[in-house]
Length: 394
Ligand code: PLP
Image 1 (cartoon, rainbow, N blue to C red):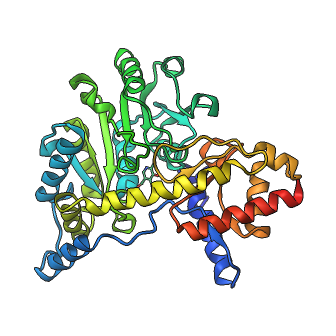
Image 2 (image 1 turned 45 degrees about the vertical axis):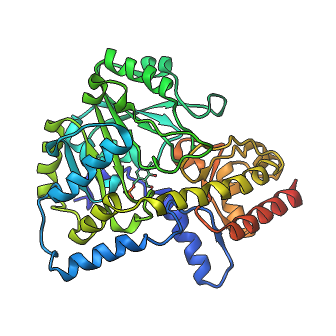
């Protein structure tokens, strides 16, 4: 008998995690690798959050909580959504889960029947297609090219919708492109979703990392009707530098949230109690550190962007949010003797000792993703290495 279920036969490990692991391995061998693969802020979790976590443990709050999250945390999330996004939710419209990643996983499990289609804009976050497939769904890709700022148009969305379409995923600010949909663009996409009666999965995990005075806008804010068909997914990983705490949440239709909570009650149960208490403080406490971290990312971007743009052959848009650059390096790869950008990225790691993520994992095989969630000093050194590598082979 075959060992593994059909369900996991085509499952591929997350490229982001794979490259990060490879870079770590080289580092452990004593090789001076600079990792630009990271998908997490390089700052410590703010002190007030650590204190709240410790206090909760000392107070004995180390037992199970309700599967969908502590009432006090749901309240903090409801307050956050009202304060930051002008969105009103009730407690039965919120679920807290084990990171936004697992919340999305649970969401697809409860909304997709076998063969249901989910529209995924390219370039996409690596886990969307796998999660959709694991739920029996079919990813339908729509490409937002670099010429259209890596965003999809309402017409593209309309053309991709079939009888089987259940939902579209909107990730703004985007990982990996760093692009942000404007309020007007979101309104147009929402109009199509409403007309065609599909759900909108709005992944807003990079909400707090926006630059150049741009403001984050949630597609759920367009109207009550759009809010009713939108599931907002967010968390504290990127905003509060809490990646390891594994807290994310969804806000949306009560029946969907109930199904997700029921599923969680048989899979994860509650997310870690201490992490939930930490997140209450993350939302109810001072947001000063969140803004300081944002400013640090923005100043790095200002320094590093022109340098990346100046590397021969590179075509790159200036990101508006998140902490990634997504240069198209197809010309650079070709001119330096590589058949593909994947090969170019592998050579960057082994020959120039800079780890980047090849865009093929995001459906964008002409690009590489560079994360600037690392110190300016390392970023500048990494760019020097990439530039020297390219110039030597050009
Ligand atoms: N969504 C996007 C677009 C992400 O980039 C990430 C993390 O890399 C997540 C969701 C998951 O975040 P979390 O750490 O809360 O699971």
